[in-house]
Length: 400
Image (cartoon, rainbow, N blue to C red; front, side, top):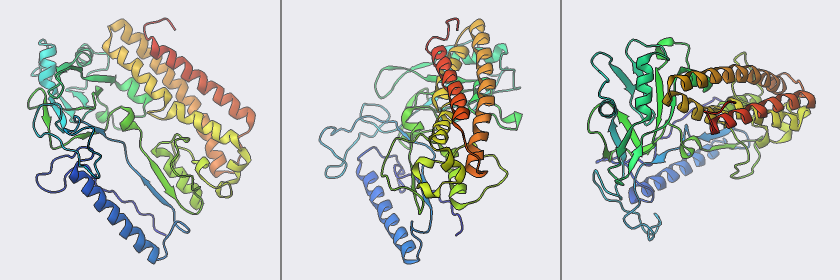
């Protein structure tokens, strides 16, 4: 069977004029979901008629990330359920019942935060997003005076929320190339490496023009940043080898795990090193390779420990974001101390993760068993590393 990848457009944005975003339970949103359900039914019915079913075909359905709803409560909150009674919202650029991300001019806000910044002498650009990626002209060194000034000013940004009237702190996390390397966000092209990334309040969308803060009704579902509802999504699998367990939160995975799982199920492998692991907990025992079967719980335990330290939004990655933010928002002594620690953590993690991935790959594709002693030693090191990073993240200024 050919492998087919398909992208399904989001259902929470209006697909007809006036092309405005929908809120939860709003009539247009519910109608589009019903249309999607009908389309799925017709699609799978057609496949079944053509002999393509989970009995002979692997189906995988997922989303690239979750979305955060940037909007207020319905005007009829408490009485609407979105099915029998549609939820309604108030259109407009301010007010507690409006729908829409808060479009924010970050250049103007930085100028207000620090009038000494000269954007003519030191221009910069960002990737417009809820997590803007900053590129300061000339690619200054990460520890240069201008980079440090931008970072500290960004960390201090606040604004009055036009929806709630409260004063919001706009920066959740900051990451420069040191943290980005730990998060696997450095590419092979140095020109693509940003000066730093601001992971912002998920209600906000940052750009370099327009009002300081205004509700934009065209878009209301933010993603691309760091927040539980964004970093948590679903993976649905159906096929001859897949267990029918229903909805479960027992297995932590991310998108890198899909590729080796597919390769293992279809009996293929190549010379490209996957960065994930086979999701053995979701598969029938008879479908697992000899190496995974022979490894038993040693494979599963090692795989889970590997994800803890290597996944960008795993335990280690989220904890180091707190350390990175304290470094970039702090004075130069704090910055140098914490950045040095992050580099040591990255080097240790990379070496440990490489050994863990080699053992997992050997079991998945080379019929080699993960033995108890090997798994125990690697897991012990991974857990100790996470414990150390969590302690440092809880008190970055302490002498660890």
